[in-house]
Length: 256
Image (cartoon, rainbow, N blue to C red; front, side, top):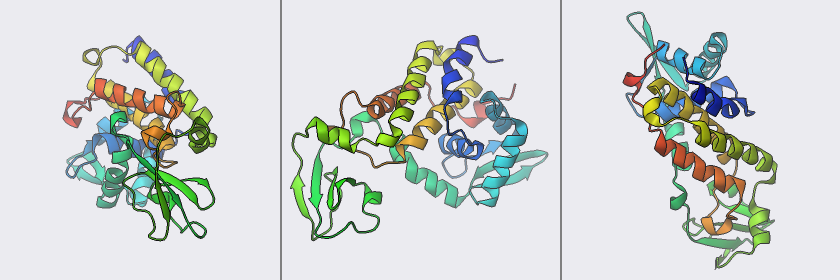
């Protein structure tokens, strides 16, 4: 049975919006079994999903969808099903992991502003630039700008620019996540007092709720973030919690 402190600590994380079971399962595999050869046995998968209050039938439907979408493959070993990411699922998880697990100290220290002659080339924002206004973009200094763009090295950014770059539609979601992470930090027992199963469930909920927000907008360089922006606060809290509760090996996780 989960400890009372653990149940209290994760309550807000479980109640945040956007908890589609198939997406939650992608977060779980991306955290626990992202590398080639990593597997999660069926009973362990069921136990982790149950620890996050996912009903067995909902977990089965999600697993079926992910197999159909070629995210997950399953093989039988005796009477036990063993689940793993497909090469396609693994590639997508690896691609997202750099953003999800980046330390706050690793955020870009420099930035650039790019003025384009014409409207935005398709996909310009997808490579990491953020739009200030049509034809005017900012991004990390290491991004390659179009050859015909006017590039200016960024200096001290005013607060109005930082606020404008913050994804306004995600503001409330970031505030809610920050509160949930702060509560988790306050109530969670030390890692040694949690079971590997509890740590696996905890990490999944942290990664999932962070992933569903962070991947919806380009990563801003640190000089373009306000110190009290909820998105930055969440990043710091996520990194701290994941460091305090290291990823358990799947072999350590046992079903209750």
